[in-house]
Image (tube, rainbow, N blue to C red; front, side):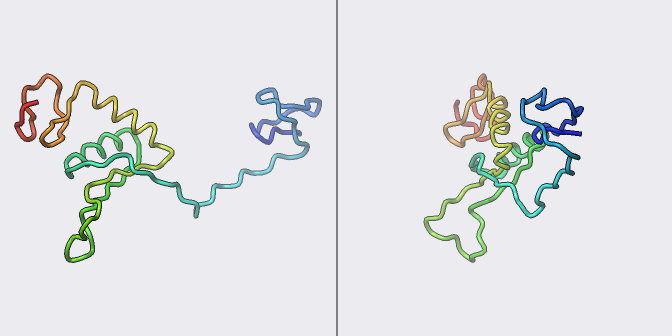
Amino acid sequence: MPYCPDCRLEYEDIVESCNECGVTLVAGAMPDLVPADPAAEEKWTVLMRVRTPQAADIVRGLLESEGIEVEVIDKGLSEMPIPAVGTDSGIEVWVPESEAAEARILLNAAREGTVACSACGHMSSAGEPACEYCGAAL
């Protein structure tokens, strides 16, 4: 039976091209799918940088609740006994590149109706008179 190499649909012998994608069919038996290379790792990207571990935990919880893998890396921590001068400290939230766009959409939706505190950066409800985290006026 001929088959479509793209869609992997099988057809009767009289059909010459795939009805779904238009590709010319290949004669013979369809080969088994080759499993993805387990050694090939997906690339990850920095989604955002936050100031506090609490903010990182909130972002991680939101994304993981939607099935997105998350890694949090504290750039201020080091194996050195003293912090290196001039290094970029802060906390980075990393996600797989394939999920970064969806993660940004989720974060933007979660931020609607909030405002960042100018003193500490905490996201508070836009209607609040003061930051619930540090008490500064919003």
